[in-house]
Structures are given as structure tokens and as C-alpha cells.
Amino acid sequence: MDHFNYQGGQLCAEDVPLSRIAAEVGTPVYVYSAATLTRHFGLFRQALDWTDHLVCFAVKANSNLAVLKLLGDLGAGMDVVSGGEYARAKAAGVPGDRIVFSGVGKTLVEMRMAIEGGIRQFNLESEPEMHALSALAASMGATVPVAVRVNPDVDAKTHEKIATGKSENKFGIPIARAREVYAEAASLPGLRVVGVDVHIGSQLTDLDPYRAAYAKVADLTRALRADGHSITRLDLGGGLGIPYRRDNNAPPLPIEYGQVIRETVGDLGCEIEIEPGRNIVGNAGILLSQVIYVKKGEGRDFLIVDAAMNDLLRPAMYGAHHDIVPVREPAVGAAVQPFDVVGPVCESGDTFQKGADLPEMAAGDLIAFRSAGAYGAVMASEYNSRPLVPEVLVSGDHFAVIRARPTFEEMLARDSIPEWL
Ligand SMILES: *Cc1c(COP(=O)(O)O)cnc(C)c1O
Image (cartoon, rainbow, N blue to C red; front, side, top):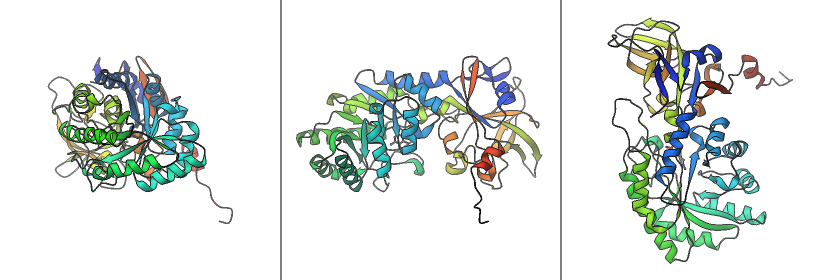
């Protein structure tokens, strides 16, 4: 469920007509709903209310400071994968003891930053990283809490670019070697083993891969405890999928996901951490865009819009689908026709959808790409020197610009020409 609905013939974000945002901020622009963010975060909490838990929002899905502040104020922890994300979480007011640091390539600079600023736990992804962190922490006179990310060799049945739990993926340590690695971690200075971490991929639409992975984590936890480790936390990752098509079977709900967690690891008495990103923010955002031209082609009509692949990369990168809807509500029974919806960038890959069914469209009309709150603005670039797409947060009947569109001057000012040119 989200808060982007037609009211009075106009698509609104909560109670704000999108046409008002387009008029005041311009297009393209991302628009997020605070009510949807709040609701989705609450669903995960509710799904785990049977146990001690921390819902750590995966910052990489949407790292705008206002989004992080909203979730942080609700009590969310943060899952970060870079020094920049750590800095954003802190700047949004999230205390270090609610920040988990994941990622396969943490640098010494990033690790130091997190140790100094406070950290709940590092999720270790390799032995070289484990040794580097131990040496760094020891040199700083610190002992840092760690979990080892295990790779359970489970097929998440999702897009190959976002599957992370198979042995051929670069993530984590093979679960078969985990006991050895934990023994070594426990012997190193600077580290304190607190938990086990797993994350098998993103946009999962089936609970079976979770069930398989978490059952393996439960077995491992028992074995590690028998080996003498104190395992008090399980970080079970993120990845629960969202419906990208209105008319499609919906993926499982957070409450059903919570039941799988309870059934597989619930008897271990561990505090449960999860790291949802897409499921919290995906359907809490849309990308608002305006039609520049309607171009009649041979056998097909193109809707050339002012959003492009640099603003929303997912269709070009993953072949992803976003429902495209007109902002002016079509009359009941209005005829639709297929359009290829494309952006202005000079690549054929800059195609959002082929044959999208839309009512009659004209230059100046507004459209919305639904389900664009996750992996949307965060992946935006200025390719073709199109200024970085702005973001707006709506709450009830008001909205605020939470990232402004740079002017051409601001965009150009980031470059410099050496004096010897
Ligand atoms: C990407 C990622 C997540 C979030 O995945 P979603 O599909 O957005 O829920 C969580 N944890 C880790 C380690 C990740 O890399």
C-alpha cells in the first residue's frame, strides 16, 4: 500500500497534487511520501515484535538525509556500505550504536571513521578484511563488535545482478568454512565476535530461499556456540521484494517474512537485525516527469519525456519495469494506446518501457514512474550534463524540497580548469 492516489481527477502524493510540485520545483523530480515510509517501517517492526530486534534501513536504497532522519527518528538503525553512507547516517542523527557496517571492500579510512564515530557492528566479508580490522582496532586501543557474513550458497531466484547468496558471488565467507574463520576471529585482538550475518539478495519474491538460508544460519549458530562463541545477534540481511506491477501477484508481506524468521531462528534467543531497503522506500516514491514531445514513429509512437536513464537507471541497468501512469486521471473507459516511453539521452538504452498503455498524451502532460523510491535517486548521475535530479518529501498537505536541483552554474562550478591550460 502507498499514498499515491487520484483525488479530484489528479494523482496526488498524500494530499499534495503532483502538478503543484511540478509547477513549483520543475521536472523531473523524485517525490516521496512520509506516511508510506512510516507505514512500511512499522510493518517490519510489527513482523519482529515477538523478539528483541533492530530494523536497520539499508541506506544504499535511498540515502537522502531527510529520509534517514525520518526513519532514524522512528527508531530505525542503519545498514551502511561506505564511509559516505556512514557519514549520512550520523548526519541524520542516528547514533553509532544503531549503525551496522556491511560491504566487501571497507577501506582502513572507512573503518577508522566508524570506530571513532561509534559502531554497532562490522559485518566481515573476508579474512583479509578481518585481519585488517583487527590490526586497526588494536592500534586504536579499541575492541569492535563483529559478525561474519556467511555465504549460504542459496539461490535467491532473483535478477543475477542482485543475487548475493550463491557461492559464485563475491559476498561473504562460504558457510562450510565459517567455524574456522570464527575460531580465528575469536583469537584476534581488536575484535569481539557477537553474531552471524547473512544477506542473499534483493527483490526476493519467494520466502523459500530465506527459509533455506536461515535454517543454515541456525545450524551454524548452534555449532558456533558449541565451539564456545557467544552468538547473541543474528543479522539476517534485507531483500524482501516489492510489487513493481499493480496487476501482478504481490510478493510476501513483512509479517509473513517475520514468521519465517521466527520458525527458523526464533528458538535461539538471539537479538534479530534485518536490513530492508527496497521494501521500506521503493513504493514510497515516484519519479515525476513531463512529456516533451509525442513523436509518431513507424508502427509505434514515442513519448519523449524529460526524465532519462541518468535519473532512473533501473530499466537500462536491470531491464526493470516501473508502472507509468498519467498524472491527470483518465476518464473511466478512456481508450489507451501503446507508447514507447523514452528519455532524451543519446542511447537507445534510454528507454523506460516499450508499449506502455496510456491514454492520449500531449506535450506538457505529466506522468509518474511508480515504485521509484529505492535505487532511484541514489543511482542518478549527471550523464549528458543533465543536472542531478531533485527530491521532494511530502507529508499530508505540505511538501519540502529535500535535495534541490543544481543550477547549470553549480554543476559547472565543480569542475576546474588548470591554470596551465
Ligand atoms: C542491498 C543490501 C541490503 C538491502 O537490500 P534490499 O533489497 O533493498 O532490501 C541489505 N543488506 C545488504 C548487505 C545489502 O547489500
